[in-house]
Length: 413
Image (cartoon, rainbow, N blue to C red; front, side):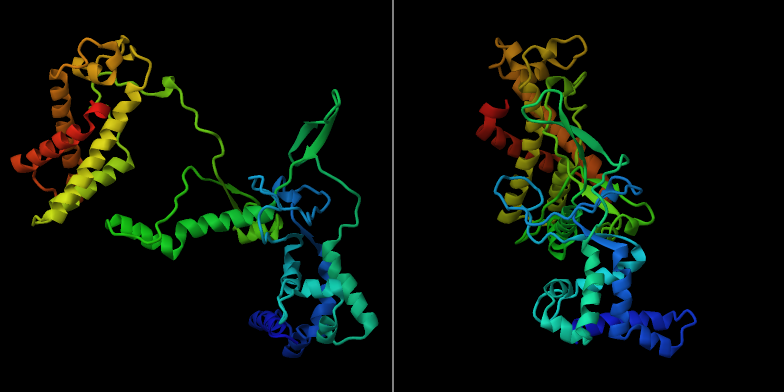
């Protein structure tokens, strides 16, 4: 007997000994003797069915033909589908109390093959392990391999989702398709996302970002995820893989972005007052704050200050570009009452006669400085160690902004 089978039976025997349920030690020893356990498993195997697309994801009461998709050709067509993902695990559904049988059949023996593959080949190795007569071995194989069979007629169920699909070349003729879930792909998808979000490498990279340190690996993030639950408090009743996923499936947004002018929120009174905050600008200003609290000055500090100032300026002027790209004349709408300088800046094609004049540019530069200083004071005050900005710090902003504008004047003002 191989170590995998020895360990499998030993673990279950140990669990039974902790909860004997009025069994004597002799009865427990006999229950987990290999011949006895396998014989019992062969009688129970029909309570389970190996599948790749369980119907119970669609509805827990659905009773459909067990679908096992095999030998799907791999194709570089760009689709996430069965066949294009390597090593997708099979699933199993049925009596949850019989899942130990599938665990046994999935054991990998010394030669790298599973118990199930040995049984299907009726290999001499598995015959030697079972150590029974040929007639008994055939009976055990037949019973255990029943996990791959669904002897009932082909059937679907009205409880699961269905869709009409037009028959090519026909008029008013449709296939009625039952929508099934590839649970192996769902399992791999969730495992990959969890690994990307919560692995040790990702945690280290996130910590490096918080401390403004370098990370060799970096990390990936996934936005707008949706978690769908299957099976409620009993996820194992849907399928084994669903139970392994704690009954959760993670969905990514697959809709293309929809950009439309009418969804751009126009400033009503003042661009800077109504400039919306987001996590990016908060992070940028916090980075500047960490430089301000350093009580010395050298070339590295100055370079870092310039770098983060540039990031902040880019964020502000990128926000402005959303309005500059709109249809000219939007600033003349009755509900828009922004100052004239902001009209000339944000809606330049509506003011061709003044777009090259300097007074409005100076006014915008001053407004940018005021907004940055106010934003810094607001965010840094929550950190508990706010640096009081005097004329020296404000002049730094002014100097860096003027330098930035000299390099980018054509694109931002």
